[in-house]
Image (cartoon, rainbow, N blue to C red; front, side, top):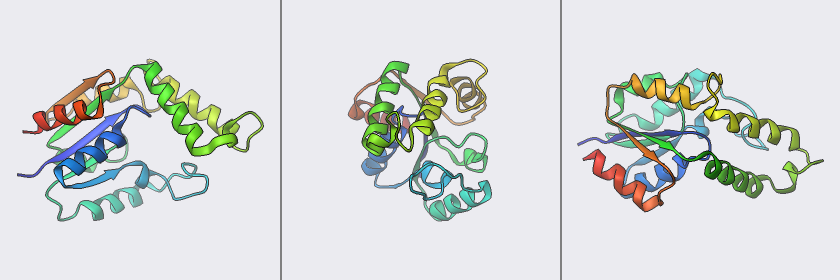
Length: 179
């Protein structure tokens, strides 16, 4: 039986972590959308890859694979994958928890470069503003509102994990839902 699972949520909601853990438990390939959405640059996450190239790269990765886990957001560019999903998992983590995770990740990734006067300070502030706006109604970027509308249009089962359960609890919940 194939299992094609997509895990989606706001930045720092844990989609990549859950995706990797779940793929490991299932023994299947894990793809994270950031690896396809962004060009490999230094610093990372500064240059978007053309949409057609993203899709082609992901198509090549899943070709011939009966099961896989994709983490991250595909909204607006990865619709070709939607009909293939057997299950979508939506992570809705409290704002304060998510932003604390994001700050810790940014500090670990970039260090002093994101501090005032650092080479990435302005880009860091812009990213924080974008991530903080996730719950803001009408926000045109990746948002709770856009995710909810996208989830409502899916024909496969959707599991929503609300809060910040442990990784083991989240994996168990997804596995129970995946059958």
